[in-house]
Length: 135
Image 1 (spheres, rainbow, N blue to C red):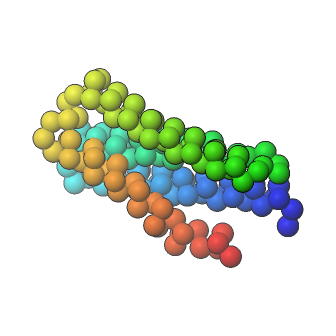
Image 2: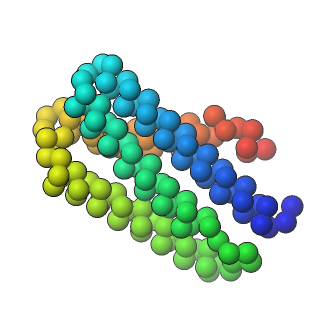
């Protein structure tokens, strides 16, 4: 298998992981709406989508590599992707704190952060869902 096919399958797999993470985010939002109310569902959806956006950025920056990228370049792109992911998370939460302060009151604040953390479960669930891609 040539490296360009291998690279494209890595990108495809990364975006499949992000797709699973997005689906989990939607399930979190819908289940929160069913169990609680609209405001709680908004907090859950926003919290989990922060994670999806940050993961998408990481995948694009870290895995879209030129052909024959050196190990140093690959490592540098992973560092840039990870730092960018962290910055996106910080900026998104700062935006929520500034423009959606009602989501930081009581149970909404808890669900916002819990949903953010649950969205990380996608990286545990995705290999089970996408097991044929790991062969």
